[in-house]
Image (cartoon, rainbow, N blue to C red):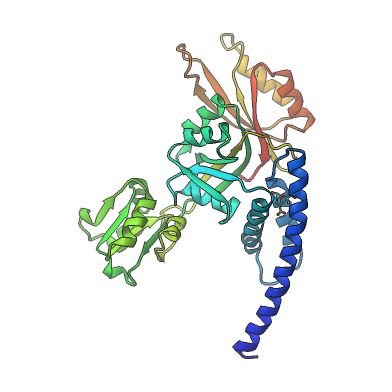
Length: 358
Ligand SMILES: C=C(O[C@@H]1C=C(C(=O)O)C=C[C@H]1O)C(=O)O
């Protein structure tokens, strides 16, 4: 078969795919009507995961699970947009890793709004200006993001899902050869995380060769405009600013991952077989010995596995009181977790149950 015949075959398959997609969207539209009628959430991450898992079990030929996921992610994005176009806010700027995390879940078609601070993302959800907000919660090298923890305690919003993405940097430039690069723009943290690559390829350069800017996205924007320059940035920043990637994954550590939360006004009340529940705990008798032990004992008695515990000061009062952020294994719909949260409702604030992706 020559290339023209092969393309004819592709055209015929595409016609069938499109017909099936139209059919799929008709069902989606019906679901959208039912959801709007009952005022329930459009986005069901658990259902989307279930679809991917189910499809990946079928004979998929050359398609890896990752490839299926990438294709379906866009289909889900289009579906949700059809059910009800919803605004997604994220910690910007455009091209940030939070933006990249948002796109890995909501696809390219969603209506995004980039906001300048974690607090403004929380506020956009509180006021209803956005339906879902994406904020970073933890990096496996740097630890937890304190501002996110404090706002989870302060604002009464829910975590409906987590997203974990590797922090990968690219060297992006319009130049075809490394020798043509006269300047690299990036942010301090990115320069620090790519020391080995920069040492190997640009070790002999003057300090002025490396130019610090406020964000890696800004770096990509500048490098796109200026001949002979490059940016160390995320691949989404390179994509947004139409900057070709010369080298990918140039960071020193391949184990650098960031965890993000999707927050919303409505809690996710669905169960899967590997869930996590986040809570905020403010102990009542914290002036007496054993207050925390009492709570942990209650977890033990109910066979609840504690996955994470982090303490934070309560900023509204002056006496150095603190609260705990905790991740528990299981779902609020599980009897044991429900019982403890119910029993300790004066001390525990439920933050959300969602699928454990760690
Ligand atoms: C169609 C639905 O709504 C959304 C879109 C989905 C899809 O395209 O399959 C799946 C889950 C939801 O996020 C649904 O809830 O089933």
